[in-house]
Length: 443
Image (cartoon, rainbow, N blue to C red; front, side, top):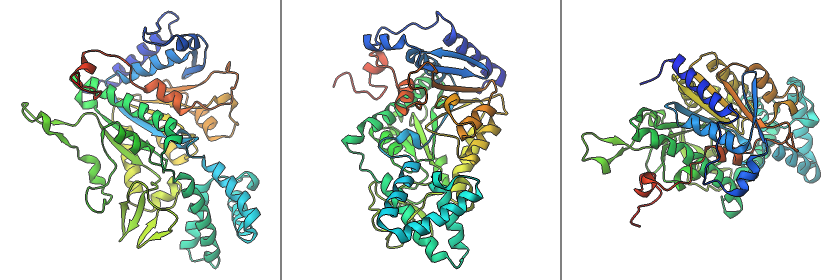
């Protein structure tokens, strides 16, 4: 049963008070001595509305774990900053491409720079600093679809930009990227364990987690599969997995529990929404299909299977399914009472998504917990700073590096976010029985 918004608000007031009480936080006995020493240093600022408090890593984790223990509907929004350094940010990829073309393909460089100048002037930006790959590709697609006289040159530029971006995402998830994958695992396992605990306490209505991401990589999928969690990504099973939004409203049943009074759904369960597309999506026979985990992107076309280009949310919505379906699910998830949205690696540069979050914040039964870089160190006109200055309500929480940090301009790393969310290392009855998926006590 959902709580009334007022009661839900009171839970967070109590939680914040407990976290911000000078004597409320006790470092658990299983925390290493090194972590205890580090925890004495204020590292982060926890902010709610106009109220700020400096907290150490243990206190920040205590606060986040307190939220995860509540009977709430959980949703996450993960942006490209989460997958660095395994996958470079788009801006870095774009800068490298511009430098490479200038040196090795002057003719193509001239075509690219002329189009950057046009779109940068349209958006009142400096062409020399322009780095928005998604915006450029969406604009070029519109020009190509419009059959302008320059369509051939536009396609040549679009192909070069798209190829550079896709190559930057096309990694093999090998040992050199294990730190990033470990952070993703810790992230999904913390969410999963928190939902299992609630389900065993009779709160099975909250055992589904909605994972939204603007990333094209496969870190979410790798983390979920290697953690043994069931999830749906909108694609059907079969020889050619095809996108169908109805898949999001289906859920597997755990037949191992068939001798109970009623069937039990698999718990926990994740729904994955890749709002801008994925490295392993193709268009085949008019449908969006999913290809094997490590597709060969050096071939622009595989039969009729065309690569899906990166695009902005605004342009994606004009393309219909699956993008319109993803955004509809995002709106629906934010509209569910007692929903908490956790964001990390997301800069709020996507104005369409940011506006949807702002609209949800107008309701008292929706809560945002955003992990960002220090807003005081961000440029005044930057998307993060603009959103931060605008979102000052009591149901908005920000966590960011403290101004007393030596490197105040650093981002809040996804590895830190994962540490806050990751499950506790304990050995009690739940773990010993294997009910948390950590092995059987007789193994």
